[in-house]
Image (cartoon, rainbow, N blue to C red; front, side, top):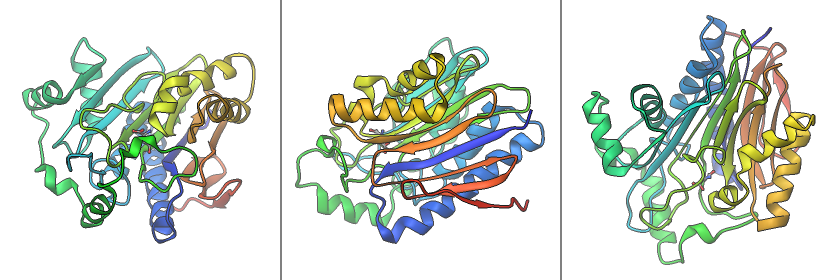
Length: 310
Ligand code: ASP
């Protein structure tokens, strides 16, 4: 079968000045992830590679470019999950790690646990030799200015549909050429969140889920809403009922709007290579590579195609 990767750069009202950089960034990440699949790499390796590319790109709110919490600090969350075994690893509230997705993978592969948080996650990183960076180096000048403008408001997490508040989580889902699926999600959360707030991203079944029996999902959007409806698992529940990945995503996202007034987006891939990128926010930068080349979009119902030149 042919391999597929889909990535997103966060569901929100992406401002016009960041639109091109966001679309360019997801296209590069999709290519990087697909390059792994093309040389026979696993879906797990591909989603990690794609998410690392976006963590390293400061246009996105993950790794470099993360937003600041109400105390002006960085707190990063990430998850990775392997659809073969349901193995999963996650970290929350880590500070000085440039690629939290790889630390999440180490939690999955080198500990008996699923989630490590803050100090313990940092201690674990140190114990296995994951290099740390000065937390300040993850924060852009743009973010410092935006945070200064926003910090007098109530916490950013109160936002709901069509918000302008910053939250540009990144994520990837993939199916490899032997039919294994995987997902990964990484974020700085929502600007001006309370210190210690954990969003949906590192929570299994909320910010992501991967199961070879149904598919892989990475979610983005208003974390408290995603947590309430366990969005990733809800999407796969609909897939298990026989619905397409596109219809399942629409049903679950609409349920989140109707039930808790929360907006968001998701990317989904099935073990047979069906895929979708769906959102209820104003915009979401996404890109995918399948046997027909590179696909991408930003506005609702936008779907451009380019030949893949590697
Ligand atoms: N879901 C993330 C959070 O609430 C934010 C986002 O997707 O942009 O932490």
